[in-house]
Length: 135
Image (cartoon, rainbow, N blue to C red; front, top):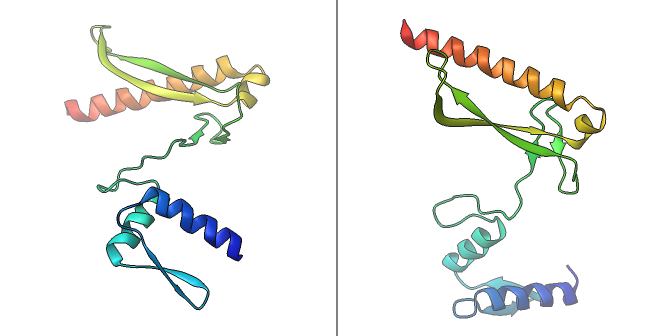
């Protein structure tokens, strides 16, 4: 890091942790004062809270059909929640399965076919799981 960027980084961290962060200048480098401060800075930079839960502002999705990564700027992508229905009674069970489709698939006019294939695969896997639990 250059001196200016190190200074900006130190200022940024000291603004985020005003009461517990202080630095000592050692050989033109800044060192973090204690292990607790280091862990708090590391926790802040990895976007996880104290329990280790992910608290990122943006978590990328993958297309359920092609397994492509859906970019943040893919404004043609959609996510559809399909309800799970009890096969015997035909009543909604209160659960749903989320399917994400990339804009690439929708642009090729294959969104309907992709969603049909995904739902059929989900239905067969749910029926197999129900048959396994019934035995």
